[in-house]
Image (tube, rainbow, N blue to C red; front, side):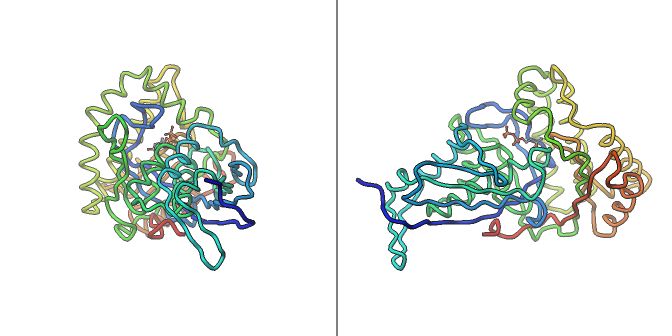
Length: 361
Ligand code: DP6
C-alpha cells in the first residue's frame, strides 16, 4: 500500500514537567530495556519552571525523521529515540480529519516521517533531570499525534526506554516507578501514588549551584556503579524496599518528619554509592555540602525537620520546605549565605510541586 500523499502537516504539542526523586533510581539490571535494580519515588514539579515543550509533526512531504533540541538539530539515530518511536508507531491508530481531507490508516504511520522540536526551559544535563521531562514529553506528544489509545501506565513504560526517570514524569503529584519482575519490562512502569492536589503545602526551591553540563552522565555513572560498587547491592536489596514502603506511608499521611528524614537519607546513600564506585563519582561539590550542613543544623535546632534536601547527578540542591512560611525563611537564609551571582551559586528556582492534570496539552 502507498503512503498517504498531499501537502498537509499534522501536529501536536505537549508539555511535561521534570520530576525529582525522593527515593532514587540508580543502577540498571537491563541496559537495553532500562530496567532498574530498585523501585523509586518522585515528586513531579509544577510545569511553569522546569519543563519540556515538544511539538511533533508528520507530513507526506517529510523525507526522514528529524529532531531539534532547543533550536539545534540533534541525531535521532540513538537507540533510545528509536525505541520510543518504534513503540509508539506500533500502537498508532487510524486518524481522520474530514474537513482537512486527511486520512491516516494504522499501517500508514510506519511510512510517515516525523519532525520533532523540543525546548527545555532549564539547563540541559545539569543534573536537573532534563531527559526525564524530554522523553516523557516526546512519548506523550507522539502518542497524541498518532492517536495512541494506551493509558499513562503503558506510555510510562515506553518513556522508560528513553530515559529511566522519564517514566515518572507522565503523572503529576507523587509517583512510584515499580521496578517490575518480568524480563521483557512490561511491568516496569510508573503508578501515581497521589495526584497533584495532594499535600499542596510543600514548596520546592532549587539552588542552581552550577548550570554546566555534568561530567559523568547518569547513564555511564550508574553503569560503573553496577559494575564496581559492593554497596549498591545492599542498597537495592535491603535498604530501598523498606524505605519505599515508609515513604509511601509518609506521603499518604503528609508526615513531613518521616518524608524529610527518608528523602535526605536516600540522597545521602545515593551519593555514598557514587563514592563507592571505582573510580569514585563526585556529583556534589563544596557548595552542595555547605547547603546540606545549613539544612541539617536548622532542622536540628528546630527539633523537627523544616526542610528536606536531595541531590541528583549534579551539585544543584533541591530543597523541599514543609510550607510557604518555612520556604520564605529558607530563601532568606540561602540568599544570605549563598548570594546569587556569587562564585558559588547562580540562581534560585522556586515553585509548587503540583502540575496540570494531563501534562498540559
Ligand atoms: C540521579 O533517568 O537520567 O536522577 O535511565 O540512564 O537515562 P538513564 O538515567 P536517568 O537517571 C536519573 C538518576 C537520578 C535519580 C532519579 O531520578 O531517580
